[in-house]
Image (cartoon, rainbow, N blue to C red; front, side, top):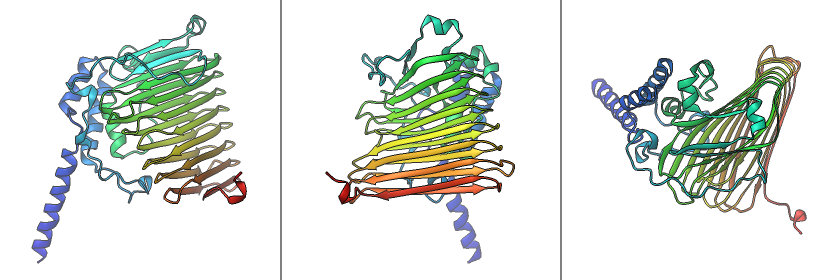
Length: 406
């Protein structure tokens, strides 16, 4: 009996391993990654990072709701082999899009179009170029100025050991490098439109560097055609140096047939100030993992979120206000409304490290249900390791009250 049980366990383990190994996007192999990375002239250290991440990706199962980071979001029916890794395969991409979505702001001072699979174009005023403001292709920076990325690229990964994190690290395929020099104040909005038209898996990566004393307002909007089966697995890394100020918006306006999963991570130096706005609208499954990492005294974070779901949309927001040193502050507010059978998940963590005395942190999540079938899950968390702090949280879920109708 024991022998039979052991045999069954071995067979089950082999079956699960086989399923994990075969659940790989079409066109994405270890050999293909190495071949293309070398052909593009990537530095050896980055090629090895890709290959090591790919090996880890192969060994990991898809996340399940049993994991705290994926609680209430079930993607066990997702099969990666149903998607072609567009940039890594020989699949046809069609023609370059003739028309792009309009900019959200009326007159952005910097305008950037990123057409996935077709490159990008940036319109930067001469005055800002002369001051050193840059928007460059991330691959170009990696091959021509690798020293700018060797220490930081991928360092702010939100969930180490997560299958999607490893897949993105191994196979990111396009991206932008945005650089705001020391003491440069960019007046007006820098707006970036990311457009994903070719069906399949896309893995964009953005690196934003705000040097000491700089200030900028950056809006990133992600779009796809309404009926295109697009899966965007993205990452945004933002490095806020001392006394810098940034307003950063991530706007998810993908088509209803799409999946959108992205991380957004801010590393904040001394006296830096960041207001982040995370907007979730279009995708049938939208998930963002957002972190404010306050690493030096005086850092201030103001994370804001706005979402609206209808139909059978599932919108998932995970946030971390990470106070690693004392005398830092954060104030989070996420608000949204749900209609039809839409579902939202908010899971927020305020983490105060043992030496982070005099931390001031707040977190609030407000959910408005506009139908009897809509559901909102809200999970505020506190992890306090210091005693001289002020940390509170609150959450509400419910319909419009009768006395509020008019």
